[in-house]
Image (cartoon, rainbow, N blue to C red; front, top):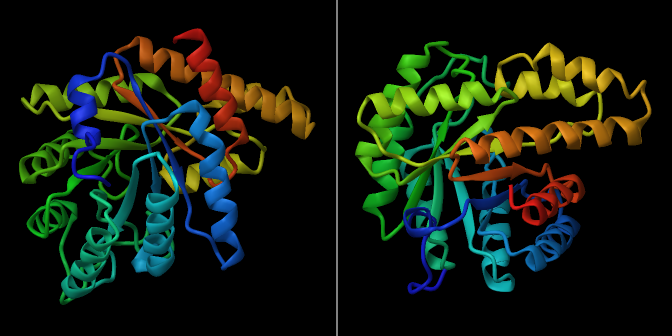
Length: 297
């Protein structure tokens, strides 16, 4: 990222409108790089504020995450953010990834503790030569260069402790360590987001919290989302999806409409932006984004 380009934190501090970002998965094979780059290129006419590339549990896909982030940085006009987790990795490995981001000009890092292989319900184990949590990871990233660091937040409470107040305190600690913004885990209840923001503000922490959003495009995704977030999809959402009666096109249309309604509620309620989790299938999210731009929320 050119040094004179505003960071996400700069944009959040000065923007007169919400920011919008899109998250992509690293490709599974060499052919996937071109598909991912093409997906990002299709976003450019809509002028999103940033894109990001995920990082698998235990550091899986590490090289592909760095390479995808590098290629986007070199070929796209959209600022790119690389993810980093401290799950099952040594401090030295983490330093290597941070330095790799710096070498390719990437200055945004989303620093998260990450899940163990097997998902968010598997008990966390610190690597003997690694870091204990995301707060330590934020400090490490900030110590390695001029990075703008984001972190995770949990409207539906983190599945490990299921303690909303603890989640707020941890987010405040990450802010004190140097985090400049947060992006939430996937959720479907806007009130859960607003409650999280209020808990964090009650602690005197001003960190901007960007909601994460993904439309449900098929019924089988319901269980996937529940496993991913550790929280149930609201029954009202399931009932509305069931109105599609198994018709894939109808279910996708309903899922997009639900996501659009949630997005409008969040933005009108003061959310500083949205991040769309694309799962590398960005048609529905592009449609929702275009709708939001047209309606001006």
